[in-house]
Length: 83
Image (cartoon, rainbow, N blue to C red):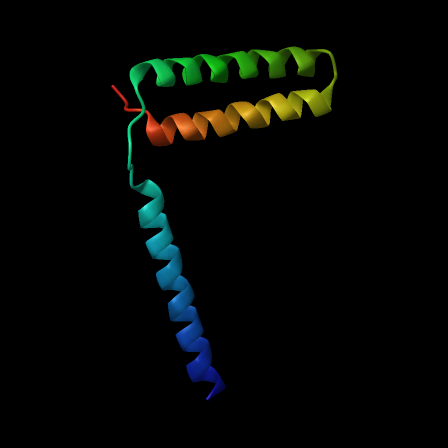
């Protein structure tokens, strides 16, 4: 009986993971070119700021800027149309 429940739970988890990964790839709305351009510029700005902070040995600020740049890059990848 325990083995049967484990199989059901395993199959349910696998189904949820597959479905959520398919949904994650789906693009609902493409942002306007101006917004994407501004977002792209912000990614560059935060990358430059992170580099400057790393060189000054301010790891906490550098990690923050790196994280923001990565978050913006993921948003850009999700909502901006690639050429």
